[in-house]
Image 1 (cartoon, rainbow, N blue to C red):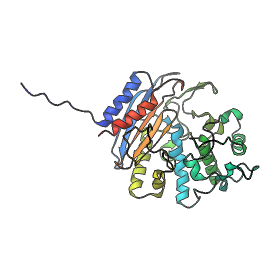
Image 2: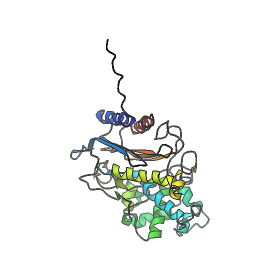
Image 3: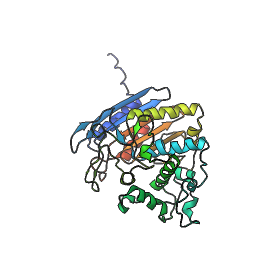
Image 4: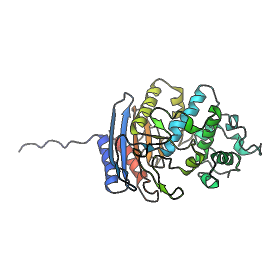
Length: 339
């Protein structure tokens, strides 16, 4: 009897893509793009599903733009702050009042005025996790004044958008222009072409399906902010990741800070592996990563020299649905790291 050939085992990237495909086939997310790159620029990318299914139907492609949501924090805001620190323009351990002197100006001894750039980068401040800033008005200048003069609730350090809203205001003060007027970085922008951008949610406040305009309500009301608002494609994300992998080999001071732990869960602008984190349970200690509420994420493994990204529109047409994104992210990370 002729021996049967051993079954072919698909490479990790293809097995990871099958996990994404299953989520789409089961109707848990409309569509997504999976990408992987190494420091030499070798990459794999695949797209599946729909970029929009409500208010019109469009297929997901490798050229689809995504609203990155909180992935804006490490890719844009933290990197700009760290570049300024590496250049000696600002001291990470100085209070943010060095660039925003009017922050809580009527309470000179308050705790808010002692908050530092480094603490904001690593979410080590007592600010609340979330605040519906957009409900306090529709004038972006007045909303900035509200952020700066509000007496904030003091609590245990948690992940808070307020940290990066402040860092964004600091950048605006330093550059003398709004974030939306700044260079978003190679391949990125602060809005997307609605004909080629993955749709996000039906916003009850704005009364429409969002596509090409920022999903985050506070960022929209502020007309640009440091905590959200960046758009781009899988190619732009992988280019960015490759540049960080290459910079690590050159001992780039910015990359070194990105990797430097600030707590058991965070570095300067990024997360690091901990039980139950988004990158899965098989990541080594060199990995940094971050996710975005709309269904995006990027993870960079400096030990193996590779990075992977999962970009989805999991909030389309509503966030009020169990998309399974948390389990999907971890499963994809564990699958990619299985080789």
